Amino acid sequence: MPRRAVPWIIVAVVITGGAALYLLLSRPEPVDDRQQILRLIADVERAVESKRVSDLMRHISADYEDSRGYNRRMVQRLVTAGARDRAVMDLSVQVTDITVEGDTARFVAEVDYAVGRPAMPGASVHLTVSGELRRERSGWKVVGADGRQGAEAAFFE
Image (cartoon, rainbow, N blue to C red; front, side, top):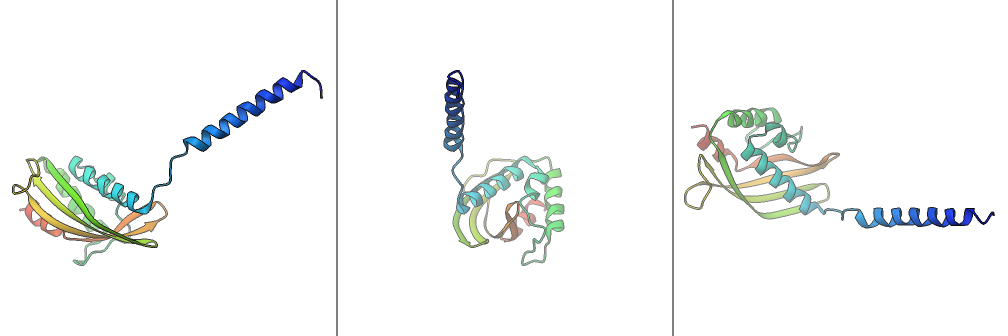
């Protein structure tokens, strides 16, 4: 091996090693199921408050069905109707329980919401929402939820 090639080989090894080390150290830590579900709930909360129907609906499974017989299309119609209202909606969501069993999960959240003013204890509507989730190819999706029906009645009066 010619002596001129040795410095270039050393430089190539250092650059390759540095790049490999950078990629190894800069990889984000894997997010556990509980964190993914909390992010989903936070994303839904933001989508409702900002009235972004498509952002909310990407978290709803095509197989959605709840105890009242609502399917994904019916939920989308409700969300779209709510988004058309000019009043500002404020939510305060506290997740009280998450249970993960394989590719399914359940959560319970205490939700206070108000239309046209900030959600504050005593000055907002309170709901206890329970939801069922399923891990799909694109991540966790809501396949059913109960407790949100009280919001429909109050919002669409």
